[in-house]
Length: 545
Image (cartoon, rainbow, N blue to C red; front, side, top):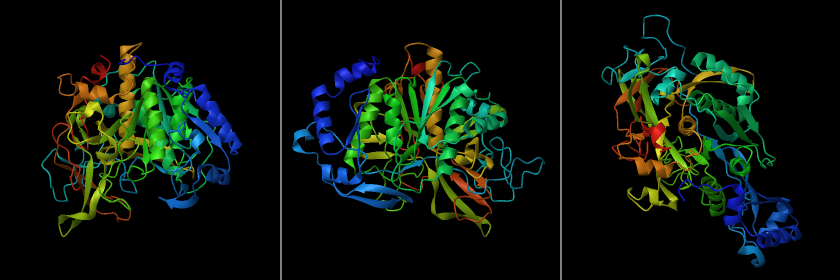
């Protein structure tokens, strides 16, 4: 049945809940005081609404309010217990507990560095427009020539496209790329077109960017950072448009940061959307949730997307192995990137030199150093940010990862540009009306890049070339000589920057790239930073053949 995808009606007929099951659950729900809002087009998700009191009684749980990551959320105090008459009909109950999604985008240390130098000095606080253009000479040179540079001002369109060998004809024609995020900024289109001038890419036509806001109730709490989500939206849209400039973009906006899985489910349910790739630059805050109901419900959505031929992509996270996050119990991976029904995208630090020549790439795991007494001293904790990865604690290893060690799903599968110090230039407007142009990174950047490269490949191949779930294709092609993935190995290099991280004063800092200060290290073959590697010279042809 490889790539013999089902229509939504076929999916519903073959795998959906039967009419008697739906009637039985609906009748119970109405008798318990719920309003039944209907079944989705895949026949798997029945939406109910009611007061919290009704839900508590019906499912036999307590509901309390907690603050997680600064966001007020509702949490169930136990596992939902439907009555015996319908318990066998219900695989999971989601929505009682709210889960905080965080955008996976990272900005270099604030405030951003000054613009490119217009002098020949190269020793001032200037960012470089290409790797090695400026390299501050008054600080210790920890790395040899070609491997230490001032931080990048943000790669432009030609540089980003050069990283992945895109020609002028590779434009994603006839493709629709969906992007799932929270909120929506009214300035997204104008911001993208302002940045497009600087980045040398064509502007987005008004009809080329569509915003979908489904009737999803907002969460009960407060504390979601809308400005951060607006910057995320700008990054996703501008990265996707730069990679696939002819593709139609659909931004699917959740009403807040606790409703991302509902927005994703609505996008998969919507047959009119027309997207065969869905980029997700978000993950649930911290380690994979222990809430098996939520995991099952979200995993169910991703599995049905795969059966429909829709490829979903999730950034693997920006906090390395998550071990330094508040409340961490050791290394962990981030959900939904850990689902076996999606493609997890890790990150690289990438050096593009003069003439858009790709010099080298390495894994994204940044460690900071401060200049003290004429030498570099590691910050504590040393990790600034880095791609997430490792073994899932919740999901067993899928068959397509059989060559990897262990018994659990391993993250990530592939990687793309993510390091903000070698990041992509993005423009966005804050809620206060200020337009900011700055390099951004994170696996938030890597996810739309990979999703858009798949759209480009499908556009080149024409009809009936939808890739669907990409991850099994990558493992089947890796090591075959197809060039679908290019192995990423460790490169010792560093970036000078005038500021890093929150709370550090301006000064002289050196960012060690691919520092390996946690459990995640880049190496030959599959590794927990870059997965199998980064899209190689055969990616565009190999994944659709």
